[in-house]
Length: 134
Image 1 (spheres, rainbow, N blue to C red):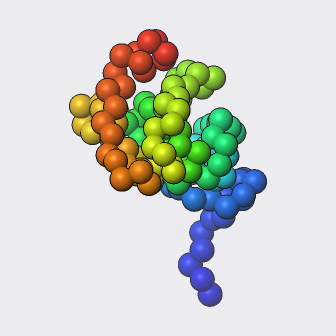
Image 2 (spheres, rainbow, N blue to C red):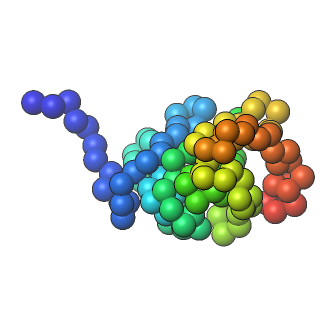
């Protein structure tokens, strides 16, 4: 027998990115166009269908305080989502030519991304996120 405990079958396509928040209480998953957030205590959906990407989402990372989620992928965009303001988002279009292949938050709130263009970019997200999510 397999030690399988749970299957979450809620995506419309293949899941390409996963990220737990720092304390493990939430899991974000991304497929070809949408991001979902799950409560890991009971695997209920905290947020489903953040659907603004236009292709594969391969990078997800939570901010250090767990209030924001960055998503990025082959559509060359980086999105920042807030669980507190679920209908709002920040988008950095054309962040990396050819797609984004990595995204990580630093402890001070800056976001760093890497792309198929051979570049690493540091984003100062504080002001734009404060303005959008206040």
